[in-house]
Each structure stands twice: as C-alpha cells, then as structure tokens.
Image (cartoon, rainbow, N blue to C red; front, side):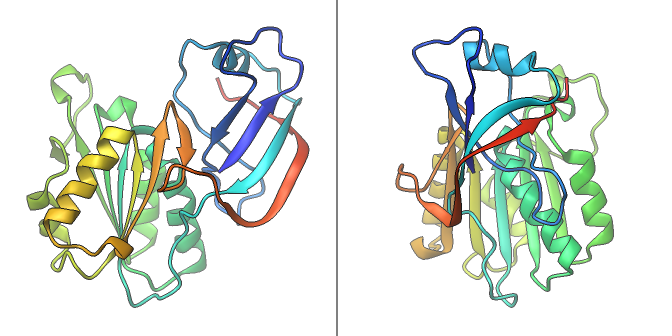
Length: 232
C-alpha cells in the first residue's frame, strides 16, 4: 500500500493530511490506482473535489500482502467491502501473467451496488480458468438489484463448497478489523496453521500489516510526487 499526502489542502483535521491506501492497480497496468470508501473527513472531502492533475506526495510501497511463489499451493482470498482493493491487483496480475496458481476469492459485501470491482473480477474469472469468484451479499433485503450468488456472511460451510481441503491453501484476508477477526477464527477453528494466514486490516480504511505495524514490501519510492485523476 501507499501513504498519500495532500499538498497544501484547503482544509485539514486532527487526523492530518496523510492516509494509507491499498494499491488496486496491477503491476502491468500503466496507471497507479487506489480506491476508498468516502467518509465525511477533511481528507476525503478534499480528495473528492481534487481537479485532475493535482499533485500529491506518495510514500510507498509498504505491506506484505503478495501472492506466494509456489504455484502448486492454492490461494484463497477472503475480502470484505473495500478490502477487495489489493485482491484486484493480485488477481488481475495473475490472470495477465497466466500464473498456474489456483485462486479462490470469497468477496463479501452488503449489496451488489456496494461491491467494488465486481464486474472486473467476473471478467477475470471468465478469462482465467484457475480463478474462482464467490461473491456473497449480506443485506440483499436493502438492494434494488438482482443477485443470484451466495447470501449471508462467509462461513466454514461456504468455504468447504469450493475448498475441499481447508488446510492446503494459503489464505489472504483483507477487510475491516471485525471481518478479519471473524475469518481468522473460522480458519483457526478449522485447524489451519498460523503461517498459512496472511491479513491486511482496514482500520478507518488504513491498511496495516498483520502485527499492526508497517513493513516495506520492496524497493521503496520515498517522498515521490505524482499527479492524479479522481473518478467522481
């Protein structure tokens, strides 16, 4: 993920002018992309109205949520809400590179209309025979769209429908803190070893490593400036 800093914003608040964002773009794509849920904070209000071409400061990369190298070991992603952002990057890159990894994504959202990148992930599923997408909606009673997929929260019984041996894959969990904790409990209760579980918590939509700290992922791009385009 990347720490983005607003340069001389018209307003600020006690949280400051810097936020952490997961990189949603895949390495093969030309542009860097981040995605976030909009909240009523000074940072998000300024971000929402930034003109295209506005310069920001970026400190990156951080984090350790990257696909493992051994293609013989399946990968299972458990994402909740905007936690799907790093998953988009990994799945699209794996599809682009035609990697041999068997990848299963359980993507949980309230409603289809709240689901980030669902159409893109469905397109990746159609192009990648090694990628399985299981979307589930937890509040379809409040939705105005049709949905034929799973409903309710991700459970052990939902997992075993698509993952025959729960102890074989490496798991990647990304989403709100409570969702990450719930998924970890399911895996812990199933006997999955701790070294097969990797997490990224979105606390106030700031990404952290599993132990709550920040860790570089590779060669850093420290204090770089770049211009951005904001999709409204």
